Length: 327
Ligand code: 1CP
Image 1 (cartoon, rainbow, N blue to C red):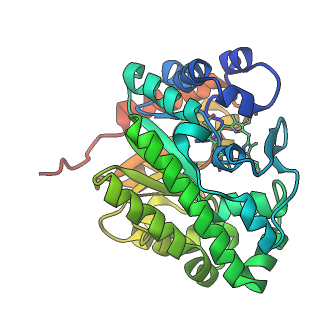
Image 2 (tube, helix red, strand yellow):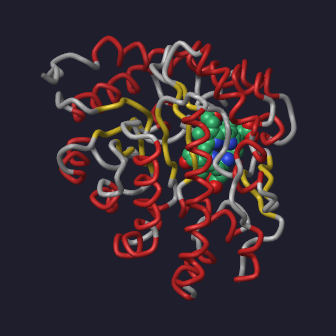
């Protein structure tokens, strides 16, 4: 999850000041930053240290990631003319540092590496809004006012994501996660019409080039979208803390694994509270196979790492109790 390592003192010490994009372009540093949460917490997998705007930045769209803010775009996408600013990604040329960092990690990491890309709606939202947004008014105006242009835009962004994910898998990533973090701002009908087709194509293309690769599709506030997300072609759907996992299971239907969903804010309370809530997540996850314990969204920066260490220990100690072994 984003910022899994940001609360760690060792992260702040290694990362230094300046744009995260400069850090992301240094493979040895990326390998060390990716390993930090695994070493500290003993997690069963690592999320690659990068950002969802890396492909768009790498093709020269003019994106920076401003400390304390997030992605900021100097000239937002407003019209058809801006399409010429979104050319295909050539990973070997545009993001060789991603490939190099994944190669290092594939060799050295003791646990599976999860590569990732931004989902089409979420990346489009940054390019159209110009930065983080609360109401997503500009991107909604574009989706609904110029659906033709919208589809062309997200088709190109989907191509960027596919190219980036393929390069990460070719370099040795074991699984990939698509973060369509802000898709939950949409109604199910609009998600289905305006975002799901591109998302389906994304997973279908990965299934052709990398059959059998585990994939995860995640968004925040997606309770109403879960049945649709479950039809996108990803084997795992990530769930934030709003929907209990037994309810989420019913919404996604059979054959889909779930990932989630401890509220990260609960890790800021006391250990007894965090422990009780972690047990609640495990209970709701049930004993059906196909569950990845995670937070419901990113680690909050003020989180005490000691609480997360305890959460991981508790999940390892109690998480498999009663789980049926697939035959
Ligand atoms: O845990 C990790 O550090 C893993 C690496 C990682 C990942 C998986 C980063 C580094 N970013 C991401 C994905 C990402 N980036 C998402 C999807 C996951 C999620 O919803 O959390 C999103 C929406 C972004 C965009 C982004 N980048 C934001 C959010 C802005 C907003 O709209 O609210 C922010 C703050 C960033 C900067 C960033 N990226 C990553 C880190 C560690 C940071 C912040 C600190 C820093 O600059 O060092």
